[in-house]
Structures are given as C-alpha cells and as structure tokens.
Length: 319
Image (cartoon, rainbow, N blue to C red; front, side, top):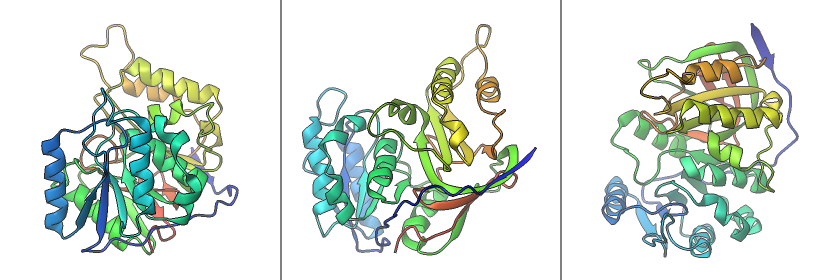
C-alpha cells in the first residue's frame, strides 16, 4: 500500500536559535538524573578541545537520590541558561528520570523571548516537545554531554545540524544501516517525538503532545516487548497514532528477552500494534539509545519518504 499525507496542521509560530560556531558558549545542565563527576569533566574537556566555551549549571553536580538535585534547583539551571545572554546553546549532560517534574517550575514566556539551541534525548524528550508546543522553539533530539561523540557518524550529524542547518537538508542512515519500509508513502508535517515511554507519560497532562498532522519519531530502550505493547496500546486507545501524518521508528535498544516461550517478540508487537495503520511508516532509523545517533530537529517542518527511509528538513533549524 502507498499512502501520501500532506495534511496541514494548525499554524505554530516556530522560533530557531542562532547557529553554533566555534568559540560559542555551551551551557551544561543536569535536568534529570545525576552523572558521575569524571564523565562530566570528560565532556567539558571534549567540548573545550573542540573550541567551545563551557558554562556549568550551578547544580550540575547535585545529587538527590536518582535525581540530579531538587526540582526547583534543576529548573533554575534551565531558566538561568535561557536568560544568560552569553550562552548560545544548552546541552543536557544526560537523561534518566526527572524532567517531567520540572515542567511546572519553568517560565515559558522567558524561554520564548530567548530562543537558543536546546539539545538532548531520552528523558529530555519531555523538554524537546514541550518547548516546541508551548514556545514554538525548534529543539534537537541529539547526543548529550556524556554521549560518545567520538562516533564519527553521530558527531558529524550533530555538528552539521547545529552549525549548517540554516538551509534545507536531508537526514538519512549511513549506507551500512538499512531502513525497512512498513507502509510506502510520502508525508509532511512538523517533526515531534523521542522516547516512546516519555511521550506516553505526558498523556492527560497540560503538557500532552499534540500529534495532529505531525511526523512522529519514536525510540525506546530497556523495555520488554509486553511493556512496549502496553505503551503502544495506551497511545492507540488515546487515538494518537491515527492523527499523525507519518511515523518513523528509531532504535529499540535492548527491548528483547532471553527467550520467547511466553512472549511475543518486539517485531511481533510492532506488527500487531502499528504496522496496520494506514499512514506512511518506516523503521530502523538511526536515532535513539544506540550508535550511530542521528540528530533530529524537533518542531521542524519535514517531509518523510517511507520507501527511501529519508527525512527532508524543509526549513532552517538554526539561523
């Protein structure tokens, strides 16, 4: 079956940050779970050696159980980086858990007035989509401060997007990584998404993601097939997927089991829950919790081609 969807979503006024240049200042924050000191210092050294200045959030090294400090402290680091005129880009050091807890403490009017690059993935999915939904800010599903930026495909995609994304471009897998066309077709819309579980967790909240006429990207990590089934079923029952213009399935890392005597495989779950949707869809896209990790501009207007496994970014994502 070949499907083409070009439904126009309601207009969202989008804002973009200025492009990243060598010598610019990157603000590092820990808005979710804590990272060990050695990993943070390694990230700072790596960024500095590339030619960037690094400002550390006041609570970058805080720890409170499984969180990188108290909610209001982590939220204050987010806001201070947006308000600091010398900071050109905000880079999250890691994900984990806790981003959703900060949403009530953020000032979205201030974020609107200070558009800049905001980047991360995993638990950071929450910020990427909420900043787009509430502020119109294009954000970046990308490596984080402690990601392996020595992986050259990951690094080049990250740097190209942030430094050269001021004109339309194409995102596609390296030649060695094939995508699988689930439903042929071409679709356009604003790109949204990230971690599947985090998208589901926002349902029923004031921060729920509007999927109407969007291109939805999803990835997941460390979830058994029955748990992926549970998440997909909740989104199906919420009538979310049917509103999308297209779906891109990224990396589902470590979502299998040692044996399947009493379980469906991940592929069987995806076939049963998603593959019968009558919208363009492809799987195997290199973005998520594995490598290589391609950078995606959340909120950007894109055109996906399910047969080719490509994402055409139609507008500038930095200025």
